[in-house]
Image 1 (cartoon, one colour):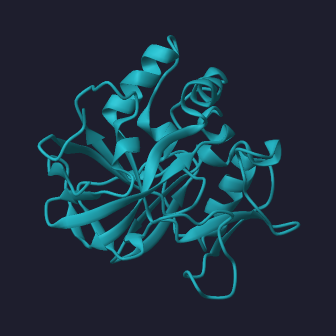
Image 2: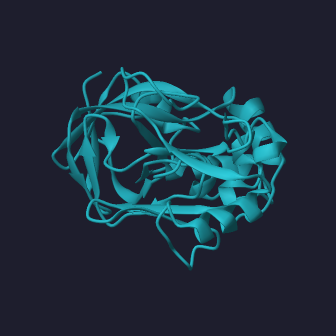
Length: 245
C-alpha cells in the first residue's frame, strides 16, 4: 500500500527539445514552472503543407522518432539524423538528412508558450511526465517478449519505486504532493497512451503488442502528468517521497 512513509529515488531524467523526436538523457534536470528547461520547445512539420508531426496517428510521420535532438542553455538546439553527427537547426545539410530519414520535407518550428497565439503542440498537458520502474515491471509481466524501455513512453522523470499491489503505483499519486529533493510536484492526471509507444524509434524496434496491453490492462493510461509546485533542480539518485492524502 502506498503511503507517506514509502520512498524511492530518481533513476533517469529526460528532455525532448523537439516534440516527437528522440530525447536526451540528463545528468541534471532544471525545472521552472513550465517544465524541464528546454523541453518540447520545437515541433516538426511537413514543409509542403505545414502539418505538425503526429507519429502515433499518421503513418506519414512514422519515421520522426528516429531523429534526435538535444539542447543546452549556452548553445541552444542541435539535431541529428543518426545520433552521432549534430548540427544547428538552420543547417541545410542537417535538415536534408532529416528529410531523407523522415520521407518528407522536414521543417522545425518553435512552439509558443502557453497562453500565447501561434504554433502550438497538438497536446498540452501538465508539464512533467512521471513514470515508475514498478509500472514498467508490471507491463513486462503483462506483455512477455516486449521490450519495455522507458524511451517508448517519453517520461521526464523515471522513479525507481518498489513493487506494490497496484500495477501502476503512480496512479495513487494523483492529487498528492511528490517531493524530489527541494522540488515539489503534484500528480495531476493519468497519461493516456497512443500508438506512439508501439512504433519503431531510435534504438527500439516496432512492438504492436505494447499498446494492446496498456489498453487492456490499464485503460490506455501509463504514467502520470504532474504540475510543478516548487521548481528547482533534480538529479539521478535524488530521494522521492509522497506527502498529503
